[in-house]
Image (cartoon, rainbow, N blue to C red):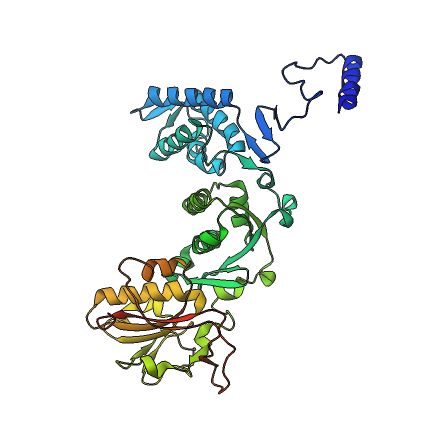
Amino acid sequence: MIAAFDAMDEEAVQLGLVFNPAKDVGKYFPLSSIEALGIIMNAPTQELQLPDDKRNRYTHELQSFVDKYRGSCAAPRKELESLVGKLLYSCRVCRWGYLFVQELLDQLYPAMDPRIPKITLTEGVWWDLQFWAQVLSTNDSKWLGVRKHMLGRKQIDVDPTQFATELFTDASKTYGAGGVLKGEVYLLLWPSHAAAEAAHIGTLELKALSLSLQHWKHDLAQQTVLARMDNVQAVAAVNKGASRVPALRPILLEIALLGIEFGFELKATHVKGENNPADAPSRGKAKNVSSDWTFTEFSRFNSPPAEVDCCAAESGYNKQPGCQLWFSMARPMQQHVEELVGKVLWANAPFPQVESVLDTIVAAWKLDPIKTLATVLVPEWPTASWYRKYIRRKRPLFSILHRYPEGARIFRWKDSTVLAPPCRFPILIIRIGSRAH
C-alpha cells in the first residue's frame, strides 16, 4: 500500500498535481471507510452513506424552505430547484429515495410548460418534503444506507449469487396475480375483471410483486431478494425505486414500506414469460392444486349437509355429494359472493388461494351470519397471513374441527380410486357460522 501511494505521489509531482491533504489518507494505516465525491463508502457494511456535515447542511436548507413557504401556494423555481438538487443527491444513499422526489419533479418540469417561474406547492410536494425532513434529521434512519448490490440499475449489474432468495411473480389481465417462492405458489384473483382489463399491464405486474411480498414478508425478512418478472417496465420501476408513471407510485410505496419494515433488500431482473413459473398460476393454470383433489373424509364433517362446493374442478366431477352448485377456477367463487350468502358451504381451498377463499367466505358470512355456514380444508401454516388473520387471534373467526397430522393420506387424485401421496404438512378442517362454536 505504501509503495502504491509513493508511485502515485511521484506521478502527481511530474503532472503538477496537488492532493487535498484532507483526502490524502490511507497510506500508513488501513481504512474501513472513505469519503469520495461527497459520499462515505463503508467497507464493513458495504453501504454508501451521507457525511454528517452534509446531511446537517441539507436538513437546515430543507427546514428553512419549509419555514419560509409554509402556508404558501407557490415558491420560486430557483429556490425549489436548488433544494431538489440536494435531495436528488441524497437519493444515492437513501433506499427508495427517488420515489420521494417524483412529485417535486412533476411540478418543476411539467410536460406542457417546463419553465414556469413559480412552482405550485401541492399536497404531494409537501408530503415529499416531510419525508426528507424526517429522514435527514437523523443519521440512523432505516431509509439511509444503500448497499453495494443494490446500486446497479441495469440488468447487466445483477449478480444472482448476491441474493439469498429468488421470487418469481407474474400477472394477467384475465385472471389474477401469481407468485412462486421456493416452490410454494401464491395466487390472488383480481376482485374486478373490468378494472384489471382497464389497467395497464405494467401496473398489474408491479401489483403482483407487491402482493407476493406482502404474502411472504415474514419469510423474506432481513434477506436480499431478487424478483424475477417478465415485464420490463415493472423491472425498471423496482430497480430505480421510482417511476414517472403516477399509477405505479402507490404500488412502489407499498413495496418500499414492506422492505423497510421487514428489512429485506429488493432488486428485479427480467425473465422470459416461458421461463417464469408464476405465469401459470397468474392465468389460473397452476398444476396439481388442491381443487383437483377429492377429500376422502368429507362425510365426517358434512353436517349440516353442504349445498355449495366452493373449490371444485371446472367440470364439477369432484364436487362433494349433495352440492348442486359449485365453483372452480373457471368460475371463481370470489366473483359470486351473493350466491354464497345464507348457504352451507364446503371449500377444499387450493393452497395458493387459501387467503382469497377465506376472505370471500367471511364476506358472505358477514352478510348473513345466522344462515351462512362454511367448512373449509386448509393447510396448517401458522406463519401465513390468513392464519394470523382468521385462526391465531384472540377471538378466531374460524374454529378448528379437526387436525390431520403431516403424512396423512386423505385425498384421492382426480376421479381415481388411488390415494394421493401423504400430505407434506398438517391439514386443518375449520368452520365459520352459527354452529361453528
